Image 1 (tube, rainbow, N blue to C red):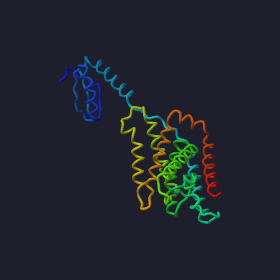
Image 2: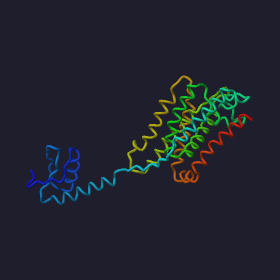
Image 3: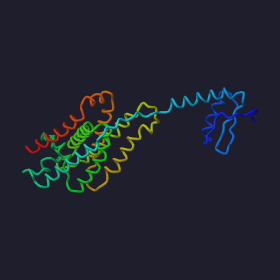
Length: 292
């Protein structure tokens, strides 16, 4: 028992008192934890109270300095605008294909096909992103693409986010075309959907590095993205798993690049409106080449 005990710390948690008792014991200050109606109290002898309070203050200050703080993520406004543009683009192409507006079949002209690279038809990697086999296929990609595209636009801006998604998804389709047989055919925005997931996951992960977070907390965005890929990207009888995986991987590369200092500086030099117009212009060019 302490002579003339004086309370230097109170908490409803016994563990908080235990931690501070360990600190005081380490500097040879006798202490005692007593239970009170409202919780627990850490006591020392009155003659050592000032000395104990000094060490406890130092301990609390050190804990505050060590506590990892995540960077404040910039949230771009009006992300819904790019989502509306995305939805309109998919619906426009779907209606155009259903009504046979052009002399050529859009799937014949614009879907990803094995051997397309040897024929110089690289534009298919981008036109295929706007084509869908049926209403269910279209609605699924409208929903998922709108959701993940919205969050990507919140994080990177309306124009820049969709430009990165387009480049990542197109790259994934080019890689897939180089790996599959000549009889292969594929279409759909799902590659872009998983490119957006990979972009978000990797960009968030990369911006968390260097802030003293435990490894599992740093990797949480990547783990979450991979779980989404495993859950949504592999279900269904006719699911193009290779396309989804490549989309996620290419999106992740884009996200890591965008989070680096050089990548961030390059993106900041491109106005959001210009980036958005570049997406529209590139898709228009690709469809012009496909239908020429």
